[in-house]
Length: 510
Image (cartoon, rainbow, N blue to C red; front, side, top):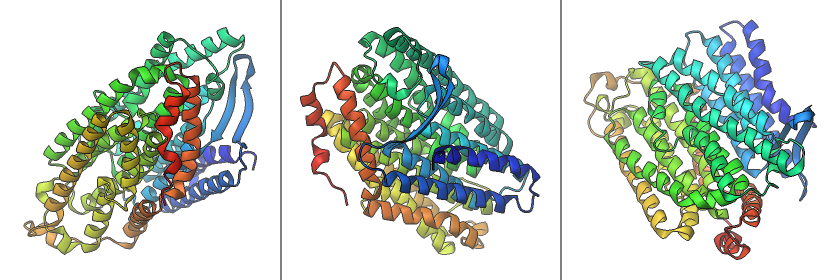
């Protein structure tokens, strides 16, 4: 299909427009049906991508404003493909788990528009189109947190918006500057990300452009010290908002580092590599201590997300094939398990209307199915071998070990700390005596909740046992990205590149 990628992007938005005429009783069924169709479309994209021959590209190009080199240019590779599938999958299971009834139609319309923007970010290869979808993603999430959140929801929503919007302004400056430099070098404007890679910019210029883009990505990820908006957003957002925020929106930032920062500014990436790794280690260690001190289950998972994003950043700035491949895989695994954990917290919140650790205890006796599924997803978050979280963390640490064993040791230490606070959370919530009378009569998961969470638990195991289902396509695209980066870089010769990427040739994860 010539316009399959456009269909994937705009189908949710078109469905959202029709949702205005759907009655309230049928709106959830309608939304689940639409999200399932969208998920099937992304699986079809995966199948079509897998059928391509070597050298073929899966893209779509329509001239938009040719005078300024702005085109409607979409494309997919092994890096963006599975983020697209992840977005559709988590929206689908998130809508199944949805229990909100207040102004449900407005919420569903917001979610479907948000899904459109997520797809647009991961599929855009023109910087202007990318920026439009990037900015549009702020509005639905602002509305979701501010209207259906709890507590200081307006404060959390505004803080989320202001932080990310500030970063977006800097990125816009970077985008316009890149088009200008392309004009200076070629005599024509272009916002094509792939064409930008042909530019050879001096280090000082790269540094400023790297900062313009990377600050935007750092806020979205979020990196220390820009992370303070995230705990508020997670803490006050409704369950569906936390699921999509953790599973997909945070990945826009790390995806930006892989898609823009490394290939466009290779020398600046090398220049800032140590700094970015130190920031990542601070994220991992610092937020792990904070997570251990939290008394709110949702806040523990929120700070855990920041720590996991730190491991992803270590993998990215190892600038080796195995490290970046591991980082991309960890984006996917974190999206699945963090979304699943927020969903599970939402299930217990609907029953008890509290998220405080002190209000629970002994739930394994009362809700054994819930306790089992929580354990599976939590083990995936910890990175237990044979679960989905282990693969990305292992490859990311291998990548950074080749650059600096000290960074790998400190990153690994943070992962151990993650196991400590996660198991502490599980012990306090599920073991011991049932001290609270309200917990004795809690009902275990119903069929709807099982339909939402069981697929996540299955993926946690299946992709941990057989990660090559995704890794083979991820590796192929990452090899192209990294080889292109080192060929262009003035600070890394081909011998260094071969040394940094040698292990991936013998590593065939089954």
